[in-house]
Length: 92
Image (tube, rainbow, N blue to C red; front, side):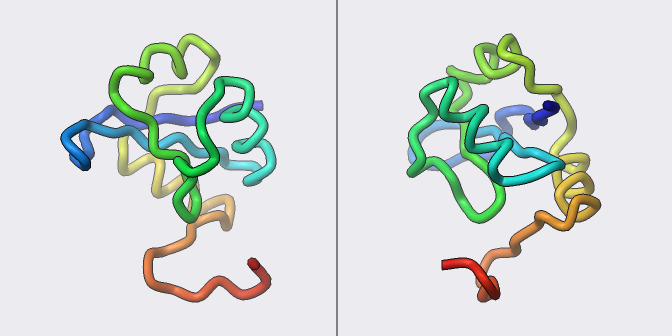
């Protein structure tokens, strides 16, 4: 199981955020996030939003640090990228 996280470079709601992804499946991602107690509401399309104060904890749990560009490349390569504003067929 390999999960990936980018640096907390994304502002929102008065915080900085990282993106936690899997390059295998959403199920793998969900299991990892659940084990860390990441709320399911933090899932957005194809990743979990992780606040900067939890970054080190997620890395210590085994997530591999990569660039934001690499996160997008990995998602596309795995066929797991879900772009904003697009209707996802087969997802309910």
